[in-house]
Amino acid sequence: MATHHAVVWQPAVVVIDGRGKHWLKFSSLNSCERCLAGQGCGAGVFSRLFSRRHARLPLPARAEWRPGQRVRVGLSSRRLLTMALLLYGLPLVGFLVGVATFHFLLLDHAWRDLAALLGGLMLAALFCLPARLGWGAGRNPRIEALSS
Image 1 (cartoon, one colour):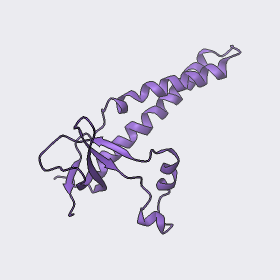
Image 2 (cartoon, rainbow, N blue to C red):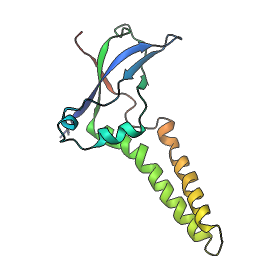
Image 3 (cartoon, helix red, strand yellow):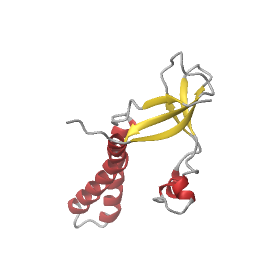
């Protein structure tokens, strides 16, 4: 029996850079209806603190994608959760393991707290590599053209 997962959609615009590479350009998330009504999860407010103005995703050059074309990009909720755990969960685990390891390795050292902090930051950065290298489950989102 197949399990069906909801798809989370985000609008984007097809753009081409100076080298002819196709990109999906996402606007900042500031128009969520639930957030505007005060009923959202708060992620929109939090994301504005750290997000860039526009996010871009590489798009394979295909004949049907034209510059300026509006599309929607979708990921299953399961893939989105997996990607969020990879992007946020792994670095957090790395930080906690690094802090605990250096804290207990240097029990009698005067620089124990600083070493634990630095060790946690180094391991968190190392644990960010899978997400930076693209090991996420959402490498192939669904892309559909929107009516003009």
